[in-house]
Every structure is written in structure tokens, then in C-alpha cells.
Image: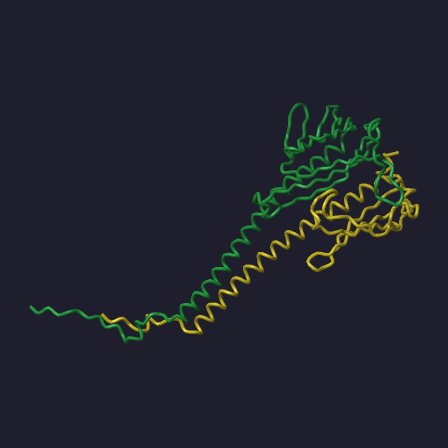
Length: 150
Length: 193
């Protein structure tokens, strides 16, 4: 019984190099894909917290009277840091959001536009080496929602 | 009948020679590297997916709890009492229909429960940190904060804003291999107060 020598032949160097290359590409692609997935999840968590921070700001602003909104300095307009982790957390690995509130005239030319203010809340933070920004805006009327408080 | 010994001819002697020491060492080296890559990748991806699954589960419960609490606290008639002792933190509210509504955080069990009409629902498990902060309606100038409710007298009458923050966390292994955390905060204004 004669066995064909070509069947028993080992892999050539070219074959080995190509197979290692293919394996390398597969592993790197797999790693990159999963890393990207985890990164997207992390950014989604950061977005959620940013939204919560902005909603908290707007809830606070809705307690102001219209006169307080128009009073310079009553509502802080400078950037304020807000931690990612809640107060008293033992986790120190978090970062800070920079929150800026801007109050300006309503972007409309109607007879009642003087009774409206545009409040813009902007949150910025750095994640994965990129500066990220989220914003929320609302109109507050002189005789609007906050009036029920007083 | 002649019997002849059977010989199998296998090419030349070079074809049946074993691998040399160098070949074995190179093959073992490559094999070890591939095994190490596969092993570390499997371990890493397994841990990461487990952590993500934990986070997803915690976040789902947290967002559901936050949505419910926000909706219900907004429409209550007001705060009745607030208790913070060594075993629990309890927010006792008067619901929109006049019935008592409780949000009770058990520090030992690390659970947050909603209790109304004798029915108890667990809103959160694995809740390692939970804070209730009570504020009055007036804003402090040049801040986004309101004046805090003074403890004791008239707390129930002056409480307008309830700030909640909590962290739910779950470890992959008891030895703290990976910790999944879900952080939630909200400032809720009681509309009817």
C-alpha cells in the first residue's frame, strides 16, 4: 500500500502565515466589534445620566417666579459641575458633567413674546476622548406653570 | 501456496521522520499563543457580557422604579412623615386619593418597597445606596437648590421637592470581579403641595 507523499506533506510557510493572518484578522475584528458595543452601552449610560441632570435643572427652574428668572444672578448661568455618581457614593471612578443654563428672550415676535423666556440647559462632558454635548430647551411663561406655586 | 511477508512502502525515509525539536518548540509556541489569545478573549468577553447583562437588568428595574416614583410623588397631596433610622428610610406620603403611600428603603435587605393599602411591591433590589432629600419651595439665590426642609416641626407642610438618588450594584463574583452599577437621580416637585 503506497501512500501518496503529497497527502502527508506539512503546511508550507505561506499557508501558515496566511492562516495566522486570517486568525489575527478574525480575533481583532471580534475584539473591536465587542469593544465598540460596550462603548456604545457606556455612552448610552452617560446620556441617561445627562438627561437626568438636565431634567433636575428644569424642575428647579420651574419653581422660580418669572421675576426671579428675569433677575440677573438669581439663576446661575455659569457652568456648574455635577458628578456622574450620586452623592455619597463610594465609587470615585466617575467624572463630572459641566452644566450651563442660559436664559434668553423667546425666539418669536408676537404680542406676548415679552411674557416668555427661553431656558436652555446644556450639559457637556468628555468621554472616550471626545467632548459630548446634550441640551434641552423650554419656554417659561409669565403666567405659566410656575404660577401654581404661589 | 507461497506466503510472502507484506511490506508497506511509504515513500522515502524523510517522509516518516518525526518532527525535530525546533519544529515542536515552534508549534508549541504558536499553539500557546493562540490558546492564550482565545482564553483571554473568552474570559474578557464572558465577564463583559455578564456585567452588561447585570447592568441591563439593574437599569431596567431602576428606570421602572424611577418612572413610577416620579409619577406618583408628583400627584400626592403631600408628605406625611419622613423617617431615617439605622434599619430603614421611609417616605410616608398622602396619596392623591387620601390613602397613605409609603416608599420604604430597607438598609439591611437593600431593597426599596412601595406600600399602599397593605400591598407591598419591591421596586428595587441590590440597592446599595439610597438618599431622600427634602426641600421647600423657595429657591436659594444663585443656586439650583431649594431651602432644605427643617427637621421636625412642620416638615410635612413645607416639603415641596423630594430629591432621590440611588445606586443599584451587583457583583459578578463575591470576590468583586466586576461591579455593575446603575445610578439614578431625580428631583420631583409635588404639584399639589
